[in-house]
Image (cartoon, rainbow, N blue to C red):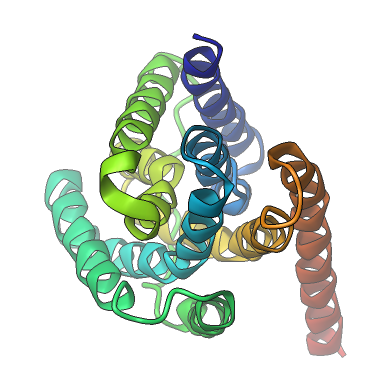
Length: 258
């Protein structure tokens, strides 16, 4: 029962916080926060708690690998939504995600391979997005917030329920499915149009470096420690990685100004 309560509360609350941050500071900030392991992290911890640390460790490696699938989804959606509504954009982008996931699942599921593929994808993705454009002003109404939270809770329950039947590789892949990104993208597309979607996704790329750092720490700690020791070390690792990314961006901007 306690695990069920966590599943039904953690992810919806995170979605609410990120959604409100996006309304306050813009879609780029919401995208950056959605790149953190705020959904995939808790789901993978739930999976490890229920299936064991060896299972969880392999799922964490697969979650790192699946960042490339997530970026493929984002790039596809950023272009498709310029010509189509959200239903077609969602279906076609999900098919792209699935195709890339099937291909990556054939690779050796080891940490060095996963990180190498993912870092290459993170460096390439910003050059592949559709151009970002301004859109309609974001709605200030909170009426859609319960729907966002409910969608996140439902997807979390579904993924953790089928994890035991999928094996660690596909559990990790699906745990990192862009649940929060999908929710934010759909509601941004519906409420503001296609233009701001690219702003959201460019911020998401920056946040995903924290995602990689979080899961990498789990991979290193879980085989030798406890479930919660890995989590307690992974959280500061995620923030440290984001600090490095933001510092690097600040240095690039200063250099460009000069």
